[in-house]
Image: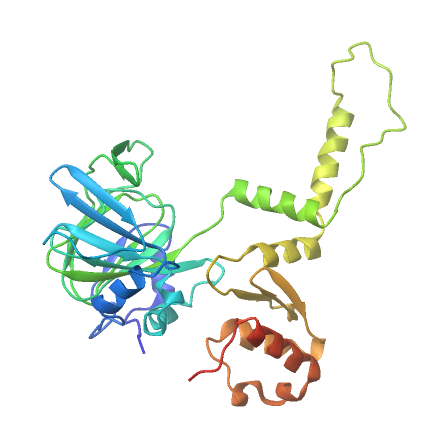
Length: 346
């Protein structure tokens, strides 16, 4: 079991979405949860999202998976596997210590294998990431947040930027953690053959929320009513939109957002991802679950069970207790197992 050596509460107060930092020995006696051969095996699979990146002088080479490793150079290359937590149980355990953060913000675990000199060049990400150094050593540089960085197209598959002056310039060793908030430029390369494990957290953009809510409104045939104004006044300027008319249209828009229960249903249904399982509930409605974008409602007396399903990575007979005797819960659990969302531990 992986355990963090620092206070997560203090980290959140001082660093979360504020400034990058290096946490030395964030994990004691860190051991890679997956071997390079196992990771390469995943990268060779059709359904796994993987990428090969190599640098030859000033030229960059990028290939998307499934990958082969027949003719790779000796140095200056790396490959990454996205969402490795979906495909490898041991790797998934590395995410557990970070579950002190909301699961609805969690994106995935990306694993990188790099030969000396391997990296992806300077770039900026718009998500929070904890980069855990596994075996080997890797040098990292992180710059200040700014809107002035210019993109440099060294390869169409890489969104790199021009170089920057670092505020962090450190070499990470096994168990060290580099935390980078959104918008801070960074660049890392392997000093020796190494593994890196990136636990990423994404947050939605305003335009994504608006677009998603519009889709939800249309799909559920909400607000299917026209603007009416029986007190419409005559006017000399037919091109004018009177303030009362503007406010009436604004009110129509706002009324769609003025129903908390509808918004909770929308949020529970849209917070999902491809290729993985997400389960959520609202503490004030613990009998209603949102699992991979679907809404499941249990009788109120089964409310505690919703918390077990959404909060725990494993559920046991002892944990569920008398809920196993409730027909509605057993029907739901059977449905979830048949869908492949939950499965018996070997």
